[in-house]
Length: 325
Image (cartoon, rainbow, N blue to C red; front, side, top):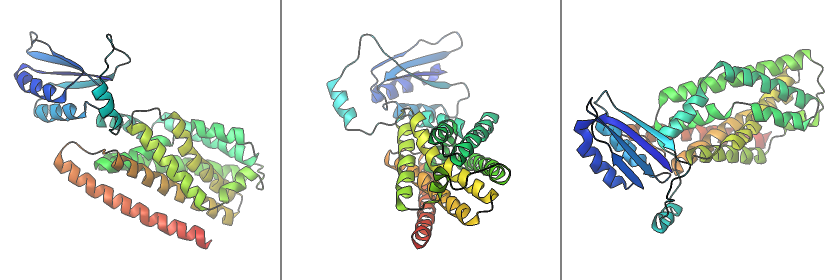
């Protein structure tokens, strides 16, 4: 459940009341105007039911300066709300977090912050050690701390809603993270004693359709978790499985002068990047993630088609390279 609070000028009260009635919340109340002529709406919704009201209120207030909408999670209410009709309706409907909630989550994850850089450095160092010493537990630990989920999801979500600024910001963060990781791994391969025959390391040069399936599943699970308002911690590890080890392996092999294996690991990384983004984009489309206004919807639909077409073309080329290789 969610608690929606909106503060707005008294002149909008009548229209807000009509929108609230159409939205059919579990509970709602609009306060009387205070001394400054401001009213407050408090409405409780079942999960996934508040998007239409949020969109309607934003459209109503968009030319007004002094308004604010806040959405909070509700852990419990008393008395407990139960509706068999609502339960049946909700079971037949795709669970979807509010667009604004998803945007807030992915925007935070797409930021190129000091913490992002530090976690990228640490996860790459740990991954390089684990790969070169054939220590799978260390490799898993590296994937746990790798901050790669945020930029990946932000890129796909930005494409789904036609937010070019978010797409560019996410791409910049993802490229920076992979570049930092690759550079560190290259230094490890060039200057540190590395066992280039380590099974954990050489396995990242094994190219096959199973890698495509893994990356597609990882991207789909990540997008599904965040669009449904579920925890994304575990699927973040899945995305790291697809991106961090092959990136580190490519850098290590290149640093050690093994260009053939470096190319194969880089090819695996490219396949995984394309598959994760393509699967996430498909899940957002399936879940009905879209902008608020019809003009933005047209732009987003066009952007989604273009991105999906480019990604599918790249995937076809990369799969062909794998099959021919």
